[in-house]
Amino acid sequence: MSTSVNDLLVLGGGVTGLAIARLAARSGWPVVLAERDDIGHGASTATSHMLHGGLRYLEHGRFSLVREALSERMTVSRLAPSLARPTRFLVPLRKGDRVGPLRLRAALALYDLLAGRAAPSPYVMADARQALALEPGLEREGLRGAGVYSDVVMDDARLNIAVARDAQAAGARILTRTELVAARPDASRGTIHVELRERGSGEVTSLETRLIVNATGAWSDRTRATVLGMLQPGAPDPPRMLKPSRGTHLVYPALTQGHGLVTLAADGRVLFVVPFAGRSLVGTTEVEVQSPPSDADRRPHADEIRYLASEVARLVPAAARVHPIAVYAGVRPLAAAEEGVGEASREHRIAIDGALLTIVGGKYTTFRRMAEDLVVRAAALLKREVIPHDDYSDPLPLSLPDSASDEAFAEHAIQHEWARSLDDLVRRRSTRWLANDRGLSAARAMTPVLARALGWDASREKDEIDRFENALRDELMMLDRALATR
View 1 (cartoon, one colour):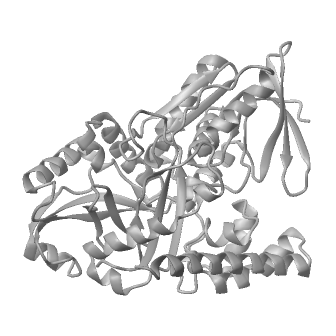
View 2 (view 1 turned 180 degrees about the vertical axis):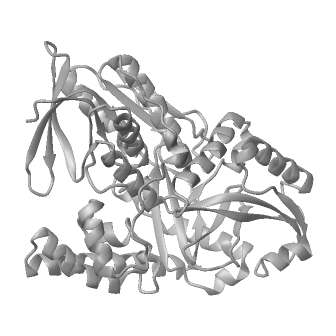
View 3 (view 1 turned 135 degrees about the vertical axis):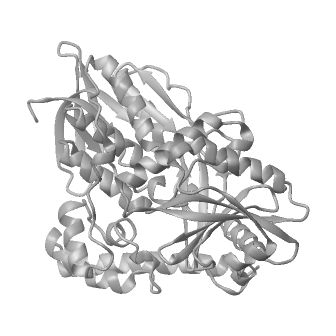
């Protein structure tokens, strides 16, 4: 047990928890972060890969959220320029659309106005001929033109890792595959005695903290009830804060000439086609799930796969002749509200239960603002300062580029980025999962590096590559079955 007392124990290694640990550590606070699985194992690596203000939120009048997100869009881009790039998006206009040219022009003008000086480049309106010159693959029938505006495409997984590394460099202790097993308040010291267990070895770490932060995303309701049950035995479970939703995405070979596409699907939902790493990410769905989500809730469903495939084919007809190469889904920790999940607000909420602070909601784009809000509230409880710092002049640490050899990449990720499995390396540290073979050759090259670093025997090494191959086979079979009935 460490004799020092931590100011914060952060539970959850998604982008929100990592940003909280980063800001607290940069302010000079002793902080520990514990993640039950891998860094970014949940929704933080299952996004649409966009840092954006949320053009669709303008329709619901959420101007302050959009303004904040647009400001953060460019701040994060400056923090990690190699992981975020401005991209032009087209919004096709068709006869009979609910949103016509005047309404779209007004929305794009307001979007740029709210971005202020942070706007990468202003919007323009294109006629049908100009729109097809930009993207010849668009459905031509009924095309009237398009609005063209800018947003930012980012690498969500590696941005998570960059924030984690910066938090560690500032003094935060990052523990992965580690879960909370006990928490007991010590009234005489004004602290909480905590026990954390490493899930692989079973090793228990004991420490003391003044506050616990619950940033466990879609599992926050369960974590809040569990921790309060430890701190306040016999107390009733707190009310739920979440209305989680599953967002599914398909990955296609490149469907555009490098532009992103945004349109309203037949049912009124927003559909994105996002260019990323030479592929097109198509999403997303909004399916309400239970809190906490089950394993089945986290997996894409066949009807969602068919829905996305059908809608993208309406937008880009060539998609009907191309088989998606991958599918993924994440569960968003949306704050509970009366609206349906499709209209639910993306603002965040914080609940304070004595020494436990819980944060839910928000958007990936605004992770720094969410962290600041929580750390300021923690500072008031601790009577500590939040030391301001200039993010613009302090870029996040860089990972090795994808061009590095598989072996060198694996060694770096194991030593410096908490990687402990092939999924960590292929899916959450690189874009190798988007290769034609879905990263299989890279996985086979990386497995011996993992084995040497982690002391695996031949049997354990074989189990790891078999598990990776089986998961990949199951995903491809899911796609085949879902699309066989199109």
